[in-house]
Length: 285
Image (cartoon, rainbow, N blue to C red; front, top):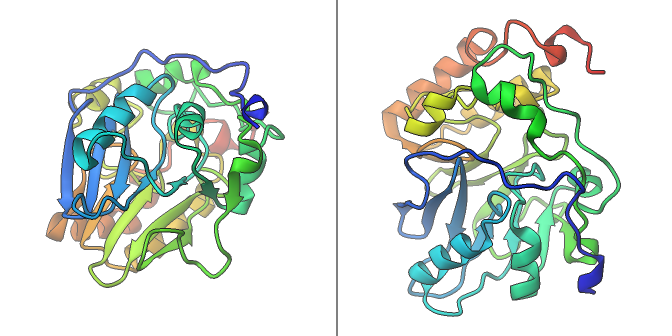
């Protein structure tokens, strides 16, 4: 079974990091955000129970860092019940094959994301011309080839439930990718947003490195559908989350989150949508 798993031909180590890399934040007793270079993974589950899932799978060649973070929180030889993906971009599946081989656990993603996870379809090329900083200009080096998880990856249940994430429901939040999903728990209004919105200006290398907190739309260089993205942000803001863990940037909560999300909805065209770029200009080729 293992021989059917592979990364794309453009899989590579990406030379980008932040001051938060290698550190974790306990947002709630059962929600832990850990930063791998410039992206966050989330561990959902209380350490005392030893029952948990991993949301997203970090940067390329980061498997050992993820394993170390998990074992530090849950104990030696711990393994999740499943890996749940917000989407399949390279910085969210970078270590997934090594982790699947080590743990032999299922992976779940939205059905629209499966072609990118089963070797069938490439993502759209990033846009280095988009309004933004150095990360945008670096984006042509980012992998877009599909990976192949074979029969290890399964679609999320159609009823909105999330396997092994009790009380969470998945919400389709496309725009950044066709099958992008976020996860929400109604009882405490905890949100795992993925890249539907982020809390750092991901296009700017200095802000990525320093992790200067500032709510923003999804990363501009790899968001092909801004109309869908805007609707997804509106959908998440309407939930009035109390806590949010995003794919990039520090977790945000309380009044800062409420006010920032409201501002993002009200000023989406100014804050999120770039003034120029192929995804804005309608020339994606």
